[in-house]
Image (cartoon, rainbow, N blue to C red; front, side, top):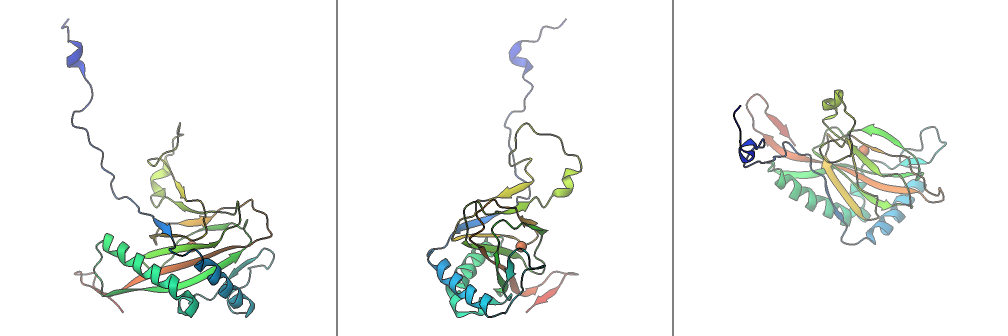
Length: 223
Ligand SMILES: [Fe+2]
């Protein structure tokens, strides 16, 4: 038999590399002035009291939604400015050609802190986001599901979870924290275990671009 020296029996590649293909970004940060949350809450309560918006479905558990154009309220100006600036940076990060961008819809959910909300996506926009305005301790977090869920038709058991096998992503809710993600990412609100004396308040928004998408066979004018 041929005697192969130990050093020659290496079974690993040399110059190994790992590339992350097609990553899904989540952008987050804190409002420069967290006190803005209190001023926004005050205005949202006025909207709620005025009778505008959408009351709790079924009426049992609080789940009030404001009208979806609250970006036009003067009290939202400071928040809108942050969203527009951050969205601009993200669209540049993606290198998206456009004439401009804008908030298509903005609304607030004032809900029981333990109320769960099913997975959904936000259609007709490129970016979606939220700002936590009021977050009772142990209220439900907004959670995000892998957009590659169909790759999980065979699902092994894992001896530990990591970013390669995770199917859920979440960031603990924090007053003044903004999240912005690609709109196609499914998300939900998990059930909380909070004292129900306080409401969970979140402002959500969608962002779209204006301009000509000048691609042969896929031309589209967004105005
Ligand atoms: Fe949503």
